[in-house]
Length: 213
Ligand SMILES: [Zn+2]
Image 1 (cartoon, rainbow, N blue to C red):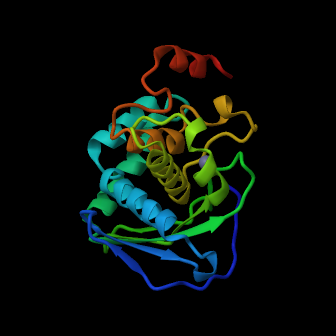
Image 2 (cartoon, rainbow, N blue to C red):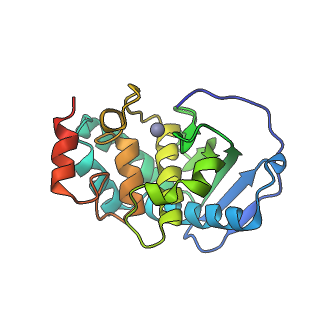
């Protein structure tokens, strides 16, 4: 969530044909993505844009966002996904950095520019922690069989929510800062294809989250 600005050189765009809309991923050539890692990231990004603007996924995120003013979130995200759905193409800049192990990704808050007149979204840009994305997958709760892919899907959706201006806590305690906030719940709902939020459908876990103040 830190505000991060730096200059970059962009490599040639990669087009993902599997997504219903045209998704272009831009990377910094200096990041030197290994082929398999880049493929996984592109696959994850395609899944995110495939699911993120769906009604059922949004409903899942609202349902689980118990720390938010859900009416406010519903109004804002509802108008943003309308633009996303009418937007035939989207460009996402993905940077890869070696960060502390506790961080999965970073994104600048409210970086995205939503143009409701021409149905365009500009300035989507996220940073992924290559340390965790390669080593942390097993420790992270994942809903789908492919844990590593799920982790990337979750992280990309979460960071994109920050680009759209949604935030969560910052006390440094996961259970206080993340569950019940829109970026977290959107991430888990996109990852699970609308099945559940960060409680993974576990009632006890949900109660624990809700009891944490
Ligand atoms: Zn976050």
